[in-house]
Image (cartoon, rainbow, N blue to C red; front, side):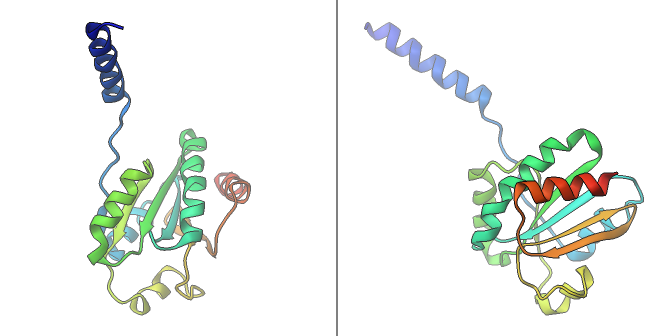
Length: 164
């Protein structure tokens, strides 16, 4: 193989990568009140699926691809998946890197709400604070809450019933 062919092959590979690489959005730092405005005060027919997770939570990490897949599967059906990281604010760079490495395409927020004991009841009175936890909102109302993880089939089935 000649030097020109090798250089051309490497150039074409790098060019293909450059066009294929889609940078992931940087997670937005958000307060609980701002999050509530984005989902609770939206009196529209969109189903907001809000998953609370953290980079250190193994069950959370296992189920994140299910939320990503559901977001794509139901994209044309007025469903919006919001991934809300509960990592400490001191872990901001870790959350950014995690979202980039995992190539998360859903909207990712990093919650800046302080002591969880002061706000978890505002999400749901039954929430102990354990994660993962998922809430669903539609027409400005919470219509579902669950503490614990999902399988892909459970999540897809639940979303399907909530959009009908």
